[in-house]
Amino acid sequence: GRLTYPIVGDPAVVNPTPLTIGVYHNMKTGSIHPHVGFIESVQLYRSAASPQHVAARYAAGASLRASVIDPGSYWAATPSISPTSLSGPASEVVSLNVSGRFVEASEYQCRMNYREFEIASAVVKPLMGELVVCDFPSWAYGHKAVRLSLWELPVVVDLFQAPAWVRVWQRMCVWAACGYAEADDAASLWFGAVGAAGLDGTPVTYSFMTTLQLLR
Image (tube, one colour):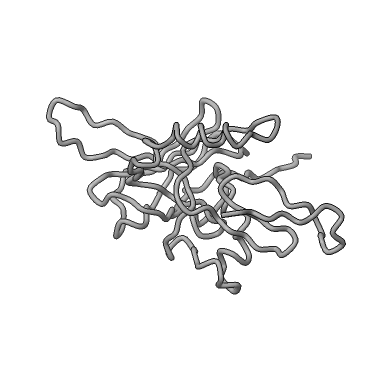
């Protein structure tokens, strides 16, 4: 539908409404309205497009709109909920959970990497198709902020095709297990304390801490 931005010069405007993709964040009212559905591609233009250009681009995407997009598996990044932890001592083993939608027949593995350094969790099956438990060994590369990712080993039906690990799509989760609540639930954790932070699609970073020792 139409998105109405605050009028320039309106004394009621506290902050400008930012240009966002995938969510409408109204800084005037504080409301957040996520996009419903999938976004295939995004293009930014230097100037406003003419009605004829908009109509031509819309017609060009007819086949895409008619297709069905189903990621099969995805995991959600929601602060304090999925993953359940974002930092810990490098000298200790790490155990965290990620929530989302998973194929119960597939196997999953979490990975943490920093440049050429990487550790992987044990390979597990998802719990009830909504939760993956990631148990990592200790991190031996000191104080680092690493990238967390989730990988899936799908079941292959073709006997001539070897199974291969594929990266699981990270996206907004609309399951209650991820902390999601309806937009009109003002008291919800999702749209209250962590709503804006949970909708921006930023890759998840996990921080390994080390103890600083001073010797005399």
